[in-house]
Length: 380
Image 1 (cartoon, rainbow, N blue to C red):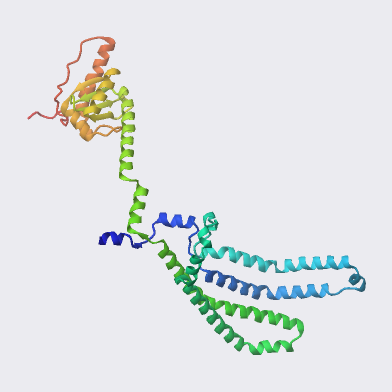
Image 2 (image 1 turned 30 degrees about the vertical axis):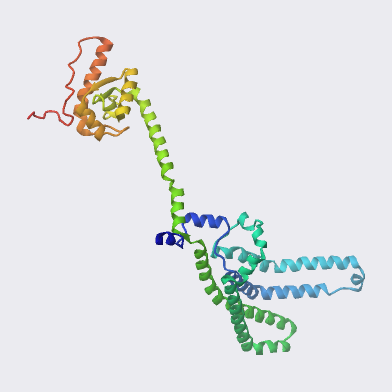
């Protein structure tokens, strides 16, 4: 019972498959505080870099736009054209700032979670209309966390704003004593610095929120031990399916092996329990190759196919067992068996010449030859 209870607790880290599925469903870590901080920081930096340029250009545009002759004032069509030209020029002036803000908004998600577009995440779901679910989200742990973050953000930003405005109060009051153009430029600079100082306060909020969002995302995707086991079975295949696949693979391998039997030069048998089919092309192969081998029913099938295609069948029980134990299908025979196999192949090739050209049959080698006996070895 204790093991069953533990298997239902979400204690396991999410598997790569679980993470991929979550990303496909749009479930990636996100921090609105990080997005707000980067956009505001980029906006304040953009105002500091482009503020003077934009203010100067806009003032010239306004000066030119309000410099109208009496005839232009009375001509409504002319006024509309001038307004259209002024709007287009104003848009071009603020375009660099807009491009900066759009770029930051697009690339900020790459810092946490990456880009993610999921049709399933934006699909209509009736449970989202359930007021009880909405109340749970508002008054639940996540809603409480969002309230705490909002209050902390308000407190931190307010303190930083008050402190900065207090230190710069003299500069703001002196704007009224400066010439208009200089005051506008100075005001733009002060506004940008104020914006940057207030935005930097969000760094603290984002530094706390990002680790929390990563932890919360990991907690949501945690799996029970039983879920991990089920996924492992699905990934690697259930035992009965794997057994069936292995059986099919073995059948296919046997069919391919049987197709090679007619090309063999000799089939060495036990005579009934083992059968090994060998092929050797002098001048083309360095050593004889095992094209098929098997026991019992497979050995019987090899002998039947060999007999149908006129392949020489040679009974040599010790050699057949040695070849079956040490040989591999599709590979040359072991070097220790060269001499024993050479005796059999020499007899087979001599018999082929006798059948083709006639002559006296060669003496048949002893079927119980020692498979590991080397040439020149003395009999004990």
